[in-house]
Amino acid sequence: MIPIASPKMGREEISAVESVLKSGSLTSGKVVSEFEERFSSFIGTKHGIACSSGTSALTAGLEAMGITSGDEVITTPFTFIATSNAILYNRAVPVFVDVDEKTFNIDPKKVEAAITKKTKAVLVVHLYGQPCRMDEIREICDRHGLMLIEDACQAHGAEYNGKKAGSLGDMSMFSFYATKNMVTGEGGMIMTDNNAFAEKARTIINQGQLGRYDHVIIGFNNRMTNMQAAIGLEQLKKLPEMNKKRERNARMLTEELEGIDWIELPFTEDGNKHVWHQYTIKVPASKRNEFVAYLNKKGVGARIYYPKPSYLQPAYLEMGFREGLCPVAETLSKRVVSLPVHPGVTDEDAKTIIDVVKKYR
Image 1 (cartoon, rainbow, N blue to C red):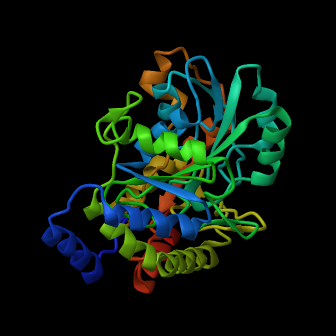
Image 2 (cartoon, one colour; image 1 turned 30 degrees about the horizontal axis):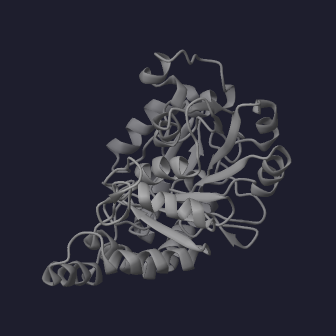
């Protein structure tokens, strides 16, 4: 089976973790601080606050920005559930705006119509590794006095007009989960240039402490460990080359699958550097499930990201959300299929994927 994801770990990561284990300093410490500094320098932000997961980064980040009860946060329904869950964790209200059918990202043209007096922020997601149309969204936010937040959990190294995803909003969040472009197993990072936001976020993830046993707010233990950070430092060194391999694999798939009339290939907007967290095609809804089952049977680990918009998950239906809210997202959820594109996909693997897809009837 050619898996949909395969973390690339080498002797460097093993040696780095071994060094931490031998040091006896396993929890958050100097290695975490170094990872924060290196990753924030790579993205181009003043602060990086390492967390236990992408979800904890989203949740703590929103709290640090002052998102609270009754606030509305505009976001996309076509992504992993953690994005809107983070809004709900902070007792705020997710306001779902439909997506662009070509990029899968939130549609800037539909954002402004969703703004009310209660709107506090817009939380975008750079889905599958492609940045949103940030200039348009930034202009809308500035005109209405809203904060702009980037969920960059799938966009390590992606660029929008030459600037790194994660450096374009008032705050951004990354995940280092085991399937991401760079991994620490679990882990996340909050990025910002705002000193006050950074201090608040760091306090929240450290049990509300400003200093040892000086708990100024109610916080959580959402810290990253030195072991995770050690892996992250080595993965960061490899990230540019791993992304190049993703781009190469995506290019090969596109070149060979072009012209199949029942498949719509991924679209990359001008000015974007897509880092291909997922290579996602669109097929007719009537064929999708059968096609995925066929691929899996033939050894191609295709997956569906995502099979339904967030607001159609059972927990959200109980809150009163209903079908029909975002028709483009609902249609896409019935058509999307992601093919393996990660750095572990060899040329031979890519040829197998292409051959299997072409032989489907």
